[in-house]
Every structure is written in C-alpha cells, then in structure tokens.
Amino acid sequence: MLSPPEVFKSLADETRARATLLIASQGELCVCELMCALDDSQPKISRHLAQLRTSGLLLDRRQGQWVYYRLNPDLPTWVNEILDVTSLANAQWLQINSERLQQMDGRPVRASACC
Image (tube, rainbow, N blue to C red; front, side, top):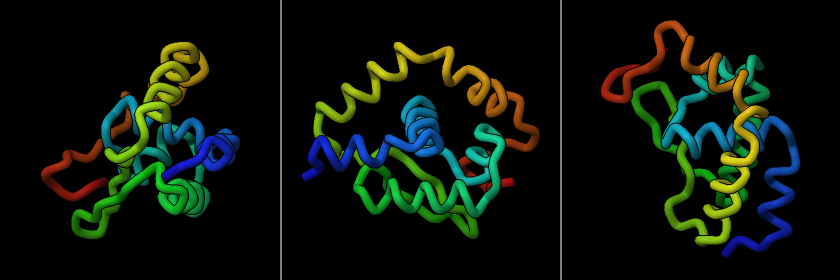
C-alpha cells in the first residue's frame, strides 16, 4: 500500500509529475510520446518512468519493442483523487506538454508498433 510520503516523493520531481499527469489524462503513453510531450531525452524519461513504476504508481506493458505506461489500476482512491484535482487545477501548467503530444507526427497506434 502506498503511503503519502511515497506518493509525494514520487511526484516531487517536475518530470515525474508531468509524466504522471499526462499518462493519467491519456490513459496510456509510450516512452516516445512522453519524449515528445516533455521535450526530453529517452534515457531521462525512462529513468523517471522506472522510478514511478518502482513506487507502484505506474504499470507498464510491452508491445513488441515498445513499452507503454499507465496508472496502476490498484492505486488507492485518494491517490487518484489527488491526480484528478491536480490535473484540473493545473491545466495551464500542462498545456505546452499536451499541445506537443497532440502535434506529434507519427503518434503510435496502440494496435501497431510505436514510432
């Protein structure tokens, strides 16, 4: 079971917070989508996603050579509520990331290979 210190420590980094909120809003994203949305390198994004997975906030699934991330469906209700309220209250903070994601060329289709 996740404790408040574990959740807040996981989300204290800006990259992890942005990635988590984007994943929460989209349902599932692959590393390449997060690289585009966050305008950052694959190693950095992957390192942060690994920390979020280790903390229990995210789960991953492999589709061919690509890895997709989603919120852990077993998160306590209070964690989902925090993410929902944070997303609603901070849409402006995530706007540039959401716009980059929407404008991404060759955005993956879940039924086929990514990028």
